[in-house]
Length: 95
Image (cartoon, rainbow, N blue to C red):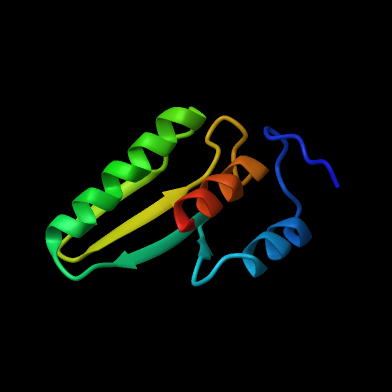
């Protein structure tokens, strides 16, 4: 099935997208995951990699960097919710 990147996903499409992702959830129309690390600098490096992917995709998540963890929150603000682009970003940072 082809889904346009700017089209809001249905609840069924969101559920299918979540099935392919480990430990991600939906909170207030955002795709969210907390990544845990052995130390603070590993989290900083991960956030930097997220930033590189975000620039390549021109799709920028919210990143909350804390001691030994980084929370990633993704949504397509211009569409007003979740689109296929959000799940594409999540899959890229999982890889």
